[in-house]
Length: 506
Ligand SMILES: Cc1cc2nc3c(=O)[nH]c(=O)nc-3n(C[C@H](O)[C@H](O)[C@H](O)COP(=O)(O)OP(=O)(O)OC[C@H]3O[C@@H](n4cnc5c(N)ncnc54)[C@H](O)[C@@H]3O)c2cc1C
Image (tube, rainbow, N blue to C red; front, side, top):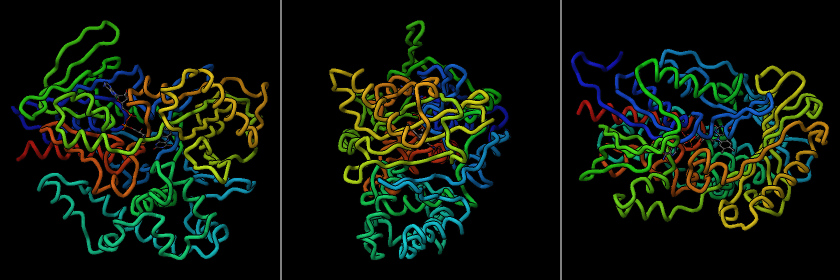
């Protein structure tokens, strides 16, 4: 077992949360010889990337597509270190079929770079300078990220990791650090290309929470670049749960422990240093304190502040309070007869409805469709999962929660019926999740999903660090660099593991 010296007392690490970020941290630390205790309030591990089963259907709760499975990709690297196989997966091609308002032919984001280049040249004539710029920035940023920089840096060691990740090719990104996608469109003379902007708004909202005008260009270059080979998006065979299940198996194989149904109520801090956590067993109501050398919080930064209570440094609390509101999601899960799915249906589709309304106002759907034999539906049936972005506040403030949920469900089904053959006889099962559902089942503050947003003020060098202002307390997950997604949170896990290892050697 690497890094575990004979006779050396194992450092004890408590990980709060068994989402992909927490599980990856826990599994890597256990593999590297740490004594790991993981706690999760839910009954199933995986958080936003877990699943639930109903009437023979398996539904992915949130995440449905995965990046980073290719050789050198982050999941591939981590599974190689853990000595386990990656779950079988099918490449998504197209990665997404995007339907703009009023259009019946999609923009297909093909996996093959040449095919995607031809598609976008046809769809958005005159925009190739913009795409070339994105491609160059993606190439440089991807290589930089692959050399494991620590962003944002909080001490000399972190800074050293950044310096070691920089190569002459990285310098091309520097002038664009303060560019948004909107700036880049203007720079390339495309400020008035409304169709291109709408497409970018739609795609970027999925990854960055904000539209093209606000999304940091360097983040967008990566988010839009990963869909093509040699990277690419994948659909996992079975369900998203296989990712968590494999991480749990290696955690336990290497001596780590995971307690589900156990919530952490607070983090103990003594003279600026994390010393342990207060745990509640949800079944028995028993409450006790566990001590540790390190505490890793796989929670939103807003929840981290809550867990710290009055021990949170004022500056940190102020910064969290000032964050723009994060998105919630409304998700509808349908179990259908296979006849509801049009022939050759792509695995992922995106629809925008009203050209005059912002995307975030229940005006778009991101849809994931199972394919025969992928383990999500019995033979002759399929699953359709459709999500839209919503403000969380109305869901918490309404006096008629069931009425609002019903309205959103009806809207979503009638919109989906424009593409799928949805009739009472083809819909076998339906269920919906709102911000209240996400708050309840993933313990995320107000049910916010997908991190803090990738605006200039919150992305990469300007985001929240994994190293918190409290010694031996680490933040992992989609509130930190490089942001949301199972691949993103796995990078943040790797960073925290390296940082913890470094405290052992210095
Ligand atoms: C609708 C939707 C669609 C998405 N689609 C995709 C996609 O296709 N591809 C993709 O890569 N990503 C997608 N994402 C984003 C992705 O799912 C998340 O960014 C990622 O899974 C977050 O992982 P995490 O480890 O940071 O946190 P989480 O998944 O939120 O996990 C945190 C865990 O911590 C536990 N927890 C929290 N507080 C406590 C506490 N106090 N005590 C004990 N346990 C606690 C929770 O129960 C949870 O299990 C999607 C998200 C949503 C909501």
